[in-house]
Length: 219
Image: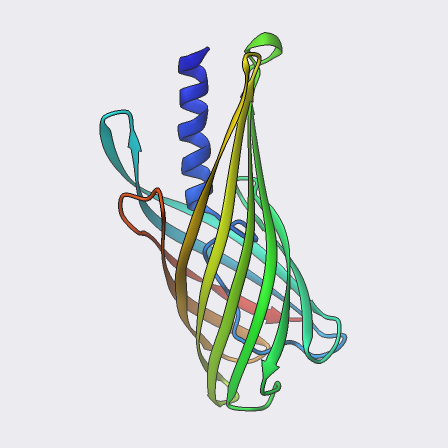
């Protein structure tokens, strides 16, 4: 039982490292909000590199994952969105633009989001479960020299709680993640993007890095 729980803790750590808020470290958007009634979607593929400690060993891994994002403009200054990944993470967020508008060359926004990931293994008395919950506070800043080019950055703080349980009981731990994403976006209605994220935490042996490429498209 202890061995199974140990494997579950390692697996949940790997999955939570790979994707954090809309449980991902990616941003996939500039600081501009969409405007009231407008919608935008995004699809992306990420290459994640991370390092974790298992017992006395330090293990490095590289992996690939995909994610989708959907946003809607509640007002000209406020967006809400949902995000999901191929490994089963999901989340929701809001973003408020406090600097500029959808035509100004400089834009700034602040957001808040919740992300979730649940992993279950075994059955009956051998059932084990891990629940990861993220609360994130990102900032967004972007520069738009023209209609088809944007350069953006998004520093972010994430409070992550991982709760593991089995027939013998449960335990939980909390990590504080912080870092930033920087990206380049081209186009308007259909807009390819590429970005790089680097994050670390109080329990990380080395910073997590994530390279993401994808496409934004307006409906």
